[in-house]
Image (cartoon, helix red, strand yellow):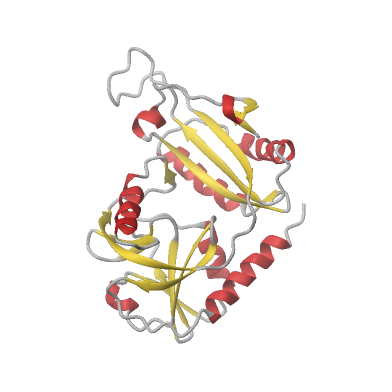
Length: 274
């Protein structure tokens, strides 16, 4: 497999970063993960917009227009039909005169991968409500994932598959790696996008695909009580059903509507044309 690193295509096992790299040392950078279906990136424009927002916010100087042709070349070189592209931007290497977190003279660069992966099977998982809280509302995904890592470790230790994150004032935000939805009757609910989490590209597609009433807002765990179905969305699992949220009384009747949404998403992916 080949990757793209500092303006060159190289073998994956030869793609090395410096121990002085700011992303390695401080998590100083941003990233995007994009579905590849039928040899083409899915919803690249949505990902590109979010990545651009992050580059501007964190003051990272990268030519974003290079990414599409780079991914297309990697798809060809690595013979990827279905899978994902991962674009990681680092602020670069700290020069000798830099002290601590000081930014002086580092030159941003990107690492791009295109890797094969079959479309995921539908599954149901269990959530723990994490004791860790979400605080920051960034415009893009960042290379610092300690909040999500700690919440996942907490869930794993308690025998759960994933964790639900709340804001500091107790509002439902997301799981550690996905946006969350629930259905009561014919109404679809999802957290307000002004809360401290990142709105996903699959999430946006689901909002477009839902044909009934939809409500975005600031919801607490009490608002999950009596939900008929709960599910989460991300690039890795597309649409994943949630069968339990620890400590929350939910009356999951079926995954019927969740499956309908998932099947619509899978249909969109399978019908991409180059």
